[in-house]
Image (cartoon, rainbow, N blue to C red; front, side, top):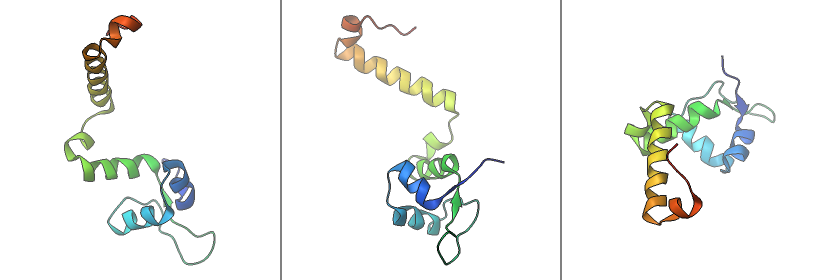
Length: 96
């Protein structure tokens, strides 16, 4: 079982406002433990699951990809940008 973090801590780590995460939970974001009224009883969330859920909302095809596929995609995009701007040659970067 993956450990969860309180909503306030998750908001801080994701650099979002706590109310934004609360809104996401109301929209169906995954939650390990629902919050209750009162101080110290906030919802507990899994950051990875939360970000996968949000990615699925923004780019459904990307959310279905395996991590290795995403890294390969990012690598290719970065190399293309470096080649286009001639930075690869100047910095002596290769695809290896």
